[in-house]
Length: 382
Length: 205
Image 1 (cartoon, each protein chain N blue to C red):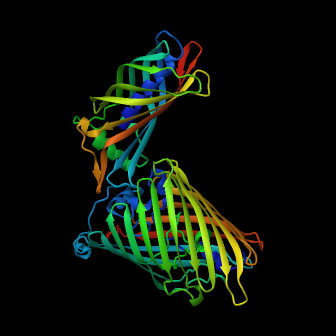
Image 2 (tube, each protein chain N blue to C red):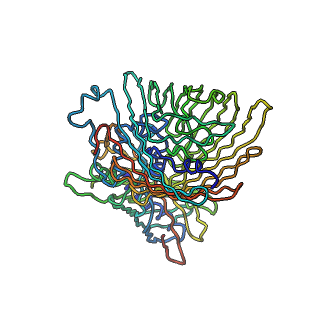
Image 3 (cartoon, each protein chain N blue to C red):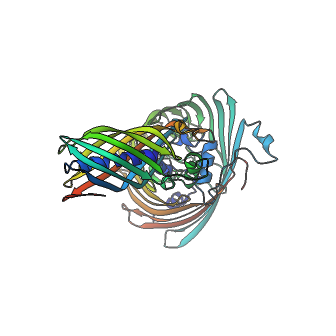
């Protein structure tokens, strides 16, 4: 292990979203269960029913808000929840010493239905310690305060299958596991705090989805790293059962410090009780220091094989690989195993253990994490 | 419902296989076929899939010229064994679709008195329709399935696929609705099985 900061990236908290592992049951895209077609954020009523059914409790979801707090739903126009994720990570630091780190993060998420297909979505977060992605000379990370706005969007859905969204959010991505600390995300500006101002158009049908988007800086980036650009994400269900999704994500961004062109291919495959999530991104960067342009390439791969031992108990084996060409050469491999138990729609427990190996400098960094996530369902705490 | 359709298809397939072997009547048994269904919903991104590998079927078959004549086709599937991958949803499916007014879950069954299909030549796919009666909740309604029969890699073996569509309302079943998601009335059924004839006797797998 070369740097404790590297371990922080590995051990960072997952937001504990509903996961694309649901592709195993034929849920080919996020719009099935999430209010936002991009995924993450609040669940629809149907999504909450699935969330309940997929827990150890496996009960019937009962629509509506808790007694005594219905006034907070503004007559059904306002939906909201709270989420808290705490974790304790054990990792080995430089010099061979072991250290543990306790982290906690909370989210308040809300959707306000304005009528006629319009809605406003916002997610505010706070944490005891920020966990920014690794900052690089050609790609500085955002250093947030202890509170941050993860999402602030106005969205318009004139009909099923069409949605326009504008505001601040994470950019569309292919395999959206909720873990933005993975190499394929963190090294392509998909970190937790990378929420540029953007406009995106979601178009989807039974077997396909297309998302053209454009973005400008959020204003929280380092001045030279304020990037603007655009891209398009497109995916297709090969066999038409929501279990064989293949897609491509192409993005071009320009900033004073560097330009980049990213081409990503990905797949989400479901086979009943198990499945595969995989993404391969190729990024061509042009670093623009005062001394002259430096062009180099980056390749990042992510492969997750998962199995649902029970509907509420999912285990995964994850392999990652990152290769960055000279002069900023990096060669990393990460392997880990995870198991996640959804005890109720409110409580999820996760355990992960793995190791990241630096093939360029040598050395391995083991890490183990225990995570507990709690959320309200609507405003129901239990 | 979909399962029952699948059973029917499987039965038909078994008959076809048998017919390719000999001119006289032969009994064909399919002991382990796969039946699956797909139901779309009012939301394009959501559809319900389910399957069972417990399809059984029996039929008599004889060869007449270049045709296979299938008689007394009887395919069955235990409705309780159909799984959508989600236990709660399976429970809803049993309660809202398969449970009759008497509170019992009747077997899904397909019967056909007679069907005629072309005998598939090596390397080719033979197609035919099989018509009969499909029973859901013990209620029988006319049903037909399009079969495709292809010689398998194993000698005297055939791979059979069948597809059909049933309407829930034809059986007096209101398409289930849950949390704003309503299942469509039409349910697509698909069956698959392999039937093999070895020596003078037909076998199935």
